[in-house]
Amino acid sequence: MPTPNIARYLDVRKLLQQKSCFLFGPRQTGKSTLIRQQLAGVRTYNLLDQTLFIRLSKNPALIRETLTPDTRLIVIDEIQKMPSLLNEVQLMIEEHGIRFFLTGSSARTLRRKGVNLLGGRARSRVLHPFVRAELGEHFRLERALEFGLLPSIYFSDAPEEDLAAYSGDYLKEEVAAEALVRNIGAFSRFLEVAALSHGQMINFSQMASDAQVPVSTVREYYGILQDTFIAHEIPAYTETRKRKAISTSKYYLFDVGLARHLQGRRGLALGTVEYGEAFETFVLQEIKAFCDYHLLGPPRYWRSKSQLEVDFVVGTLAIEVKAKKAISHRDLKGLMALREETLMAHYVLVSMEPTARQVDGIVILPWREFLDRLWDGEWMTNMEQSLSAKAGVTSS
Image (cartoon, rainbow, N blue to C red; front, side, top):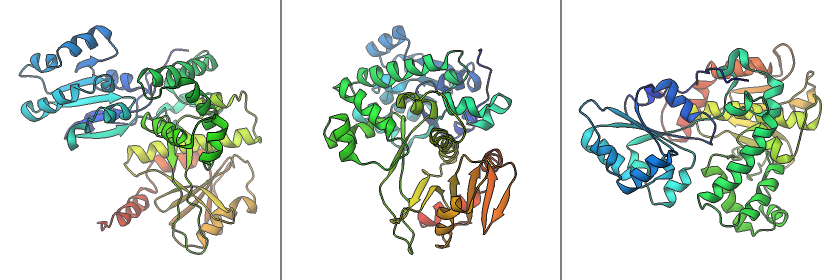
């Protein structure tokens, strides 16, 4: 099916009003489309264009030499392909006052080349796959859970085939092409194991055994997934006092469809464990995108030594996710235990129940209503105040 023109949440023009900006994110999240939508007519250099790449490789000063008195903004797409260009970019920012919009799918490549990301002269943002609010009437929960929300795959007529190409061509071949790993076979085995460990507390020793690589290699590979924005680390929330918390992180792949494909899962049925896991990942994608777009830091999770757990903690908002049409008292146990600590301002259970209700200070919300409240900013003040307090800043 043709991809409609979907307006994205990030306002690039607004970001560029005061500073240049890096926009990172996995391939096919829509960075180039965002440029066409919001920066139409701006001089753009796409480093995937081999002819242009060769010209700039021979003469990095080419962009500077073609500046005109009217040039105020320049776009460089896929900047990680030529990290050395950032020296020219910095020079043009300092001497000519040019603003740059720089996109890339890997911050790791830039750092490995000793690049300092312009020393604070540019902001950084991450573009995520679609969120429900962006899709509007085009959003279908079942399609999102099964195939994910990458723009090219969500609207594809052959999503399974495209997911296979994405995981094969990008996650394996392209990571290897950028010299991020030397042993593509070992990295492929690791990817399979990482997919099966998606959303779980990570046992690095067990993963190393399953992937047939050293523990240090597993840690390095997770670093690559994070630096290429393929995986998110969800740290543990450890500030509870009455119940000692586990401190091990979890890792989630960035897209539910990709995770399911790498796990070898096909088809979804409501009420199954697989459906519940996909639903939880989808909700996390929304929360993570919201946090990144509002600079709130990563969501965390809480789990006590006695195995009581809350899926996500953002600021002073505690969130449990259940893909169930009828929530029981048992489903509230984690939130109720965390509530005894009196550390949170809001306790929310995201469910498939048809209407909102409240039980013992815990708000049970239909998933649509939860997402509406999240993106409408209902809990933003508490989130920001919590982050300010952690940073030792007094909120005004």
